[in-house]
Image 1 (tube, rainbow, N blue to C red):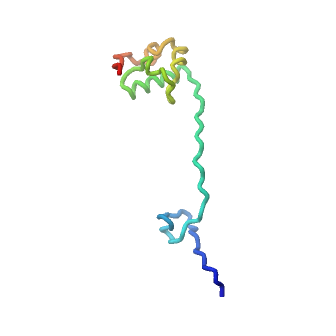
Image 2: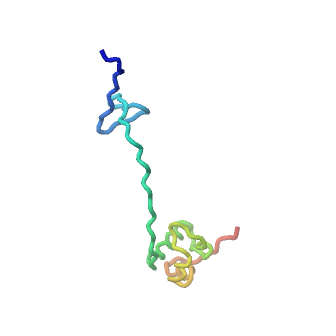
Image 3: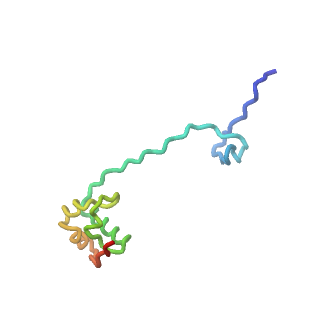
Length: 111
């Protein structure tokens, strides 16, 4: 007679439904899988064209309820073109806003 303890059979369900340490479908412990590291998300470099800048300005106006002003574009923000790019393509942020069909409107109050 063997003195080694019997090993529990592992879950082999096609789609295990895990609840803590067992599968609710078969009652067995899940197969131990190595934890996958989360995928590394690499940001692609965006080439800002005139149409892309116009779309960004319209989106800015939609979300903020006003046209952008130069101070909004002073720092590099992830989804918006750099101020230098806007000025290189349109001459100024105000000119880009006019080209996008967004009226400049009132300036934001200073903090």
